Every structure is written in C-alpha cells, then in structure tokens.
Amino acid sequence: MTKVFARELSHKLPEPAPVRHRLRGHERRAEILTAATKVFHRKGYEAASLQDIADELGIRKASLFYYFPSKEELLHEVLASIISRGIANLRQIMAVPADPLTVLWRLVAGHILHLCEYLEETAVFLHERKSIPAEKRHTVLADDHTYQNHFVETIREAQAAGLIRPDVDPKLAALSVLGSANWTYTWFRRSGSMKPEVIGEQFATMSVNGLASPKALETWRKPSLSKTSLSKPPVSKPSVSEAISPSAARR
Image (cartoon, rainbow, N blue to C red; front, side, top):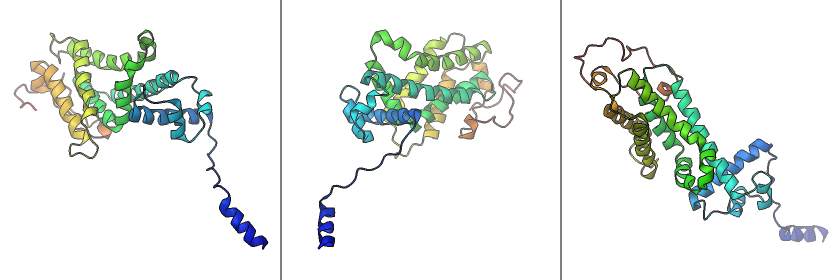
C-alpha cells in the first residue's frame, strides 16, 4: 500500500527545475551578452525586453539587473563587445608584415570573412547603433571610429608609397569600402553557393583595383586568401616597392 501511494505521489510531483551551473561574474556577463545579441537580432532592440532576454537564459529578470541596470546599458555593452572583437581581428591581420596595398587587401578580405562568420552580431551592430542617443554615440561607439581609422591610415600609407592614386581621399575611400562591404550581411546566406572566401577575395581585389595607382596595378599581385594568410606571414614574395618588371601582366 505504501509503495502504491508513493508511486502515485511521484506522478503528481512537478519535474524538478534544471540545475544551472554556477558561473563566475565575467562568465555570466558573457552569457547575458550572447543571449541579448540573439534577442536583439530576432526581435530588434525596441521590441525586445529584459524579460525576453531573461527567458532566453532561463533566469529571472531581476537577476539581469545585478549585471546591467537597464536595457540601454546592455545594448551599449553588446555593441562594444562586437566592435572590440572586430578590432582584434584587424590588428591580427595588420601584424603580418606586407606592403600597405597588400595590407589593405587583407583588411578588406578579413573584414568580409569576419562579417560572414559573425553575421547576427554584425546585423545587430549595424541596425542598433542608431538606437544609441546622439549625445552618447561618440563615447559608446568610439571603437567604431578606431575600426575605420585602421582602413584610413592604411590607405594613407599606401598613398605615401605611391601605391594609391594621389587624388583619392583616404577617409572617403575607407568609408566607401566599408559601407559597401557591410551591406554583405543583407544578402549573404551561409547555406548559399557563394562562400565567404570567394566574396572576400573578389571584394578586396575590386576595392584595391579601384584605388591603386597605374604603376601599382602593373606590379602588384594580390595574395592568396586562406585562413592562414590572414594570420601568418605569407611565403616571401617581392614587395610592390621592389623592382618588378613593368611589363608584367596585370591580375
């Protein structure tokens, strides 16, 4: 009788709540940022609520306030983490020695590869940065200007070396390249036939060909694109500034 009663009682008791692993402070913050990015991408910042983010994590909304006092503060942190990851990617690329025209090519290709890898994060950044109040954008999005400046300064260096036409405005050129490249997130599909490496290589080549000086176009050779070519020194080749036959065929 006791066994029967215990069996019947066990059927009536609710399932125990799943036990969440206890995370350290920085791990919990990272988890919240990841969940917030997903929710902002799915619903948009304006429509999303802290409750949506808490539900995504399976925690109480009150728990979020310990780490982020408001949804706006959470958006600031999400955008800052996205652009910080992008800058780290650019700096890794720029650490590989090369002439400035090759560096520019790698920056553009690397930007495209990074964008395609972090598609949802890119969409959130480009869509939701306008949600930052105008008086706070300079502070919150300071690293966005740093990101752009890596392209501007590389174009200036290439110009000083005679590899980019003197009539090109470096800032306008950088904004044009980035503006066009950023639009990739609206049409790129991971399941599509066009791979990120193909997009990155062709986009980088078109960008460089549109900016390079006539002399550079006669001598410069685009590097091969691979994961390693963006993080490790490539096989030694003559630099653009070295004497290469002007009669060499263009690529």
